[in-house]
Image 1 (cartoon, rainbow, N blue to C red):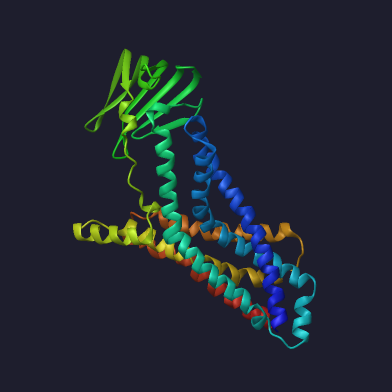
Image 2: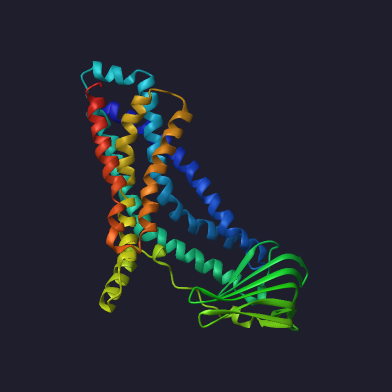
Length: 360
């Protein structure tokens, strides 16, 4: 029995490492393309800072890749296990399937603990540190650098330039925000960056500028042959406080306590708390479902296992997205919707395991 358990653990662990590595790379690449490429336009972004930014993204990505990897590893390993007739050999020796897979289930429980750490503490804190690092690089006015065709966030102001020729720009958009609300939207076909004697940017001159300004609750049109936007405030722009989705579990609980004392609806906070905790159990449910489905698929082909995993992931994350989208609908209790996929996966998984143990 011990030899069998070690064999299954080695097979699952090896596949788990590969799949987690692949999914981490894919998800990390998406985040790098989204959040890190802008840093390359800044002269202040050294290789060390870029590497630090990527490392800070890894805990956030692992909170997703670990459950995905465990599901895929269960499907692939037990698909090969069944296809190679190893299950038949185990049953012939008098060992039940439930006894054989207990170490794998225990491994999934340990991964739930790791996921809870990533979801509730390390992931949100690392994400906030990443944003602070990114903001500190991009908002530094003395190193202001735009990339063509990309938006550059500088504190409360966002700049966009379609074309850049030295300090001259074409197709420039300027957006200004306060408390997360846009109050100024400007467009200028031409603009020029002015610098002081130390070559530090001081202002942005917009020519033939047109746009909209929010006055109260009404947007008013504005235009000017030349409008000068100072960029000195970019250097002192403060990092925005973290969103609810970027708070750790302890921060969310403190925020909930504060809002409750103020008489403010705490449902959005409850949704985030339940999301972090519920998603931590994904590895367990995925394993319970993945083992019997892998056996039933009875194939060695990797593409079959990956296809099944993707279908299950879409189903699981569909409930997560639904619950988060209803966070303002207090009457629908969206925080409890987040637990539905865990309940379904674990219930169905246990049922399928019992059926597979009976040889059905």
